[in-house]
Image (cartoon, rainbow, N blue to C red):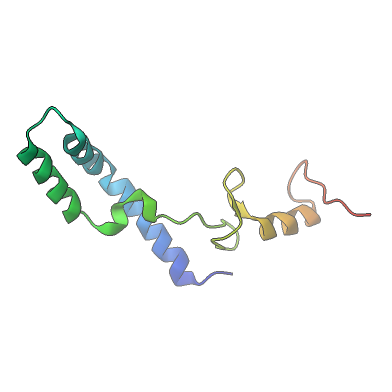
Length: 101
């Protein structure tokens, strides 16, 4: 199990990304628009830099929903390989059979 603080930090990052998504998209559109004046684009970049760092979507870490483990994460299932194997062994995931011979 991952540290509770790491899991909570990631949850807070998800909230911030959601909160600032619209503002961030508008500023990025202005900053990347080649038809605008350089001063406008630069001002948009400065405002973008004033936003909280954790509002950037790249700072979100994919974590296992069951254990909070950040590594070996399957996006399609939303969990780590270890949690997947454990739940599969118990028969809690439909259609998944752990092979043994």
